[in-house]
Length: 210
Image (cartoon, rainbow, N blue to C red):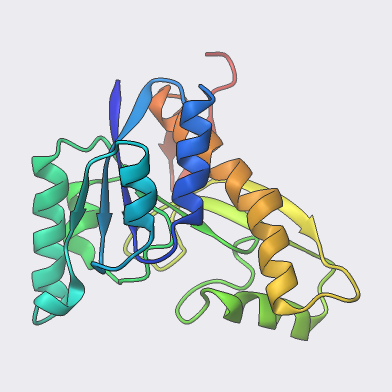
């Protein structure tokens, strides 16, 4: 049984999707064993506690720079024996130390179809504002491995969502979360825990035979 650690910063809706999927028996071969927040007041901590999941706070404000913060976060995850680290609305940038400690063992969900609308500065409502500004007809979400390149790691799963004529950034954000993010993130976590993801030449391949 692989140990899953989830990193959070805010409300924890993606964490809740993972918890719900776990309780429905949809995450095979793994279990959420720790939730780590970058802020002590993150509501995601309450979600974890309500389901009996251990929590810890590693507050960004307590560390002088990114390097010191990353070192502390890496130590917490290693001490917890995490097999997989999931970024679920984790808004704090970590450096290459953690990537080297957990190679292809960290994943993130991004609210667009990478490589569109991704990279530095593209997070939260900004993504959906830009989607609407450009007038694209399909957007969606992507789960990818975390590497040194922002939103540049191997893609594990994607799901498209239609952009509608009357959309606001807030409406589109809600639809992308409900129809894509909350669907493919638990699926990707389960695939990892089942040992069904292989990375070759910076591409992730899913084994459909297991």
